[in-house]
Structures are given as C-alpha cells and as structure tokens.
Image (cartoon, rainbow, N blue to C red):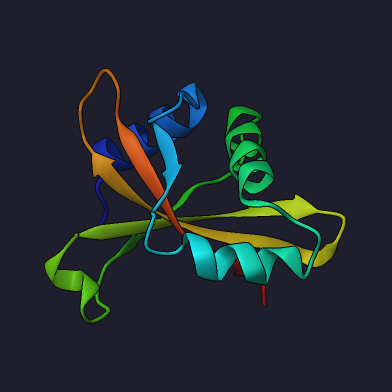
Length: 116
C-alpha cells in the first residue's frame, strides 16, 4: 500500500528546501555528526545535497512503516540515495514527514549512512 498524497508532500518539502521545511531531527544530530565526519561530510552539506538531489528529479522512495517502535508513530518513512564521490554507492538518507501542511510541509532527516 502506498500514499501518493503524502509522498508528494515529502517531495514538496524537499523541493522547497526552506529553513524549517527540511531539518535534522535533533535526537540524531550528535551521533550522525560524528559518523558523517568520518567520510568528510557535514550535516549542513548533506541537507543541502538531499534538497538539490530531489530538485534535480532524484527519486524519493516511500516505505510502509513496520518497524518497532516507529510503527506507532508514523505510517510511512522515506529515503533517498544521494550520489557522492566519497561513497561508492552513495549516501542513504532516511526521512519522515513531520508536518503535512499542504502549503509548507516539513520533513525531518532522521538517519544517514553509507548505502550498502
């Protein structure tokens, strides 16, 4: 099952790329800052790259949430795989829809790691 309306809101938030529309979830910042630094990447740069990737027509994948404890929090989660020269298969970035306002939807970036 999919939700094309919700997926369109995620794409819109990423395409707008406004401050507040695309932000890192504060709960993951410290962990990801260290992990990404090992590859010479910074949170700000990854955010910028995700926005640019989607603006240029990059694919946003939607997944039905079935993982504990997230399935009680959201129905879907999303990911993009951003090409980057420092990672052979790209950077996997997980997202969630935070606010479904049709004019200014918001997404959280909730995880990032080398694509496996």
